[in-house]
Amino acid sequence: MEENKSFLTQEIDLKSPNRNIVPITTSIGNDGKLYIGGCSIEELIKKYDSPLYILDEITLRKSCRAYKEALEKYYPGKSLPIYASKANSSLFMSNLVSSEGLGLDAVSEGELLTALKGGVPNEKIVFHGNNKSDKEIEFAVRNNIQVILDNDYDLERLEKISNTFNRNLEIMIRFTPGIECHTHEYIRTGSFDSKFGFGIDYLNTLFDRIKNAKNLSLRGLHAHIGSQIFELDPHKDLGEIMVNVILNAKKFGHDIKKLNLGGGLGIKYTENDDPPSIDEWVKTISTSVVKACKKYNLDLPTLMCEPGRSIVSTAGITIYTIGAFKEIPGIRTYLSVDGGMSDNPRPITYQSNYSACLVSNPLNINSKNTYTIAGKHCESGDVLFKEIELADCKSGDLICVFGTGAYNISMSSNYNRIPRPAAVLVCNGESEIIQKRESPLDLLNYDVLPNRFIKQN
Ligand code: LLP
Image (cartoon, rainbow, N blue to C red):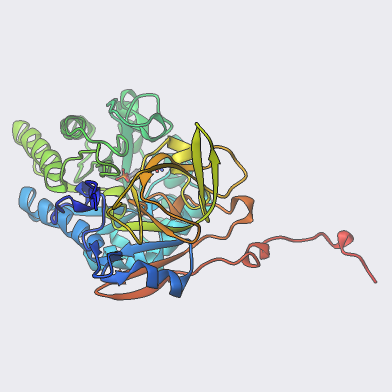
């Protein structure tokens, strides 16, 4: 039997899960089939049905710890890693990151509420957003959650609310540092032309305005330059730029005590990806801040960072069941699965690439077919893999897509009224539901037929 080299045979980096394609507990059972977290994927599908999102607890905890440990090593005693919950927001994720001592970043009342209900202490939550509603701002302030101001509109409202409550509020501001990095343009945020944050040229005016606000104290700076970044230099530059801004703010009497350098560390979706480790990334941001502070003789601020994808993406997989095949001779063979762009909108949105294997033949033994894996939505672009090599497979077989923990369930939709899959947590051979499967009937819950359209008998 011929055995092709598969990404599943690669050595696993146990320290930095973002450098692996698969969760670190991935194994092939005695039955030759795929296991994650000690659970047979085939058994999980029998129990929970398909499609299914699965999260591996050990990989998740490893990622959280990698950030904590690296920060302790390179920036001892003065740091707080914050999980960017937009990557995957749930009661479970809030609870897990908080049990590992991480804080959480939220951008809406929904994410804030999920964090609080999931047990994240309010002093470890930060509230972002380029268009926060009055209600959201009030919710954050009432719950003593740190608000990160993004624009003048935020400033006006924070000033007003601090005066109404007659309370001094410590604020942070987000600015655009003018850093370009190589990632998809939709997820690049640090350049001058960005909807997020105050322009760097405006900061002196802003510092002056905040100085005159009776009940506001500027205590922190934030910047986030983009996502799925493999270079380290942009973050090195960011550390230096931010320390320069601390100096500038000092001239206006502001005592900046916190620097938040955002997230952005990339993960390995395919064999072509080679992201730095969490340790290297943290070392880069830490040493650049320490160096610049030394140079200007500044006390070290508390260092915060906001990883999302590199915490949760590699811990997550999605399982689909193969349905219809359509062979177009000389062109391609479509293989359709029972999900697609509604549970993973990243391929159609960003042309993202993933890795996948058959659950019953993970190593692709005797692989010889090239397929196009299509979703089930009414859209030609609903394609999860343009070309993938898989061993012989048939309707009813299961496919596992790796690296789907981030920006999948959180960006999912009900396009074509397709219910969202369930999400299950696996650990040491046990599994538990963390998000229930939606049913078609659930999707009617928010529909209302106006009275005059209801036929009277
Ligand atoms: N902090 C802020 C302010 C952010 O806007 C983001 C991501 C993060 C932290 C976390 O970045 P990460 O460590 O995950 O790269 N939907 C896109 C990604 C959008 C990222 C938005 N902001 C995707 O699926 O690739």
